[in-house]
Length: 135
Image 1 (cartoon, rainbow, N blue to C red):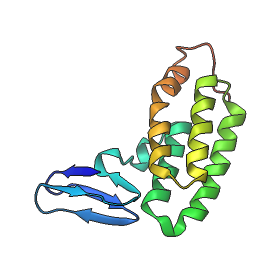
Image 2: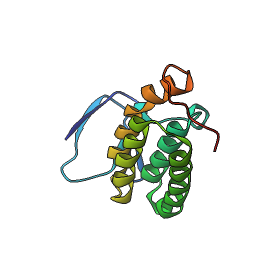
Image 3: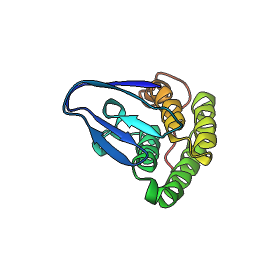
Image 4: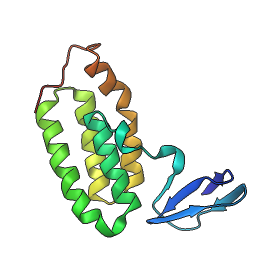
């Protein structure tokens, strides 16, 4: 896999933070957990249940030493969302993300969770008939 980075852009690989002083292309030649700076969610943007799960999942990827402890938080938050949400599309996304988290495939879980943001936003704005109830 080739990763193109701009000057000064950060890349998180297996818990290590890399920053290049010039534009470069990196080739990952084996299986690695990585996250590009542009996909990192800041804590203040984790304002909805799926975004909070995204933030927790990204923490597992960025800090693999503490991933077991963070996984417990993920399980707790995912269970709360499962009880409160009645949207089939959001629940399907949650189920897929759960499988990836259990397999420690955090990057794949992040992609799945990110794909659910528009549906979650529609629910929270009342654009769909299904609503998220208070947990």
